[in-house]
Amino acid sequence: MQAPASPSGATRRPNLTRILAVVLVLALAVTGYLSFSKKETAPKVTFSGIDGQQYTSDSLRGKVVMVNFWATSCVTCIKEMPDMVRTYDKYKDRGLEFVAVAMSYDPPNYVLNYAQTRKLPFKVALDSTGAVAKAFGDVKLTPTTYVIDKNGQIIKRYVGEPQFAELHQLLEKALAG
Image 1: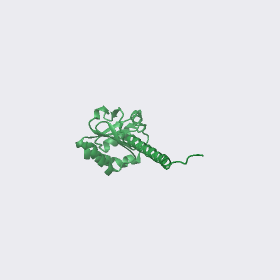
Image 2: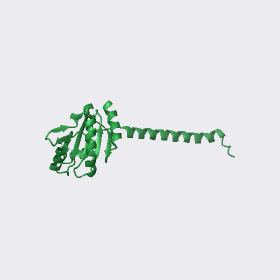
Image 3: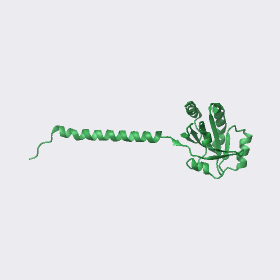
Image 4: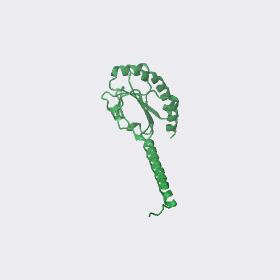
């Protein structure tokens, strides 16, 4: 004859199961938060400016930097460029640096013509080998824009045209930090 199960033994298993489930959920939540909140360091690259100057990502440290991958054949890139100019003009005196990186397939004379006729006020670079785009996660879609904080950490990546009000809020926060 078996002894009847004690009522306290019957309730311990479900409580233990609940406790383990809560611990598991909390562990997953913490892991998820840490993986999404972890900032990625911007790659070390050398930009080749259309003016013939070379500058490195390290030389831009201490400033908030926007790196915009674009092409003269990209309709969205051309559409967003006046807003990018206004954004740069609004924040340049507060420490914003901006590098417009033309994709490797963009003919250099098209890039030079566009930059000169539009009087782009920021750095314009040619990525003739595709090495810069590759270093930034193998960028293929244009426009793609990275916002990098003063410590060289990527704080946001936009694929497509950004919502400029949101971008400006992000820049305000990054420049204040």
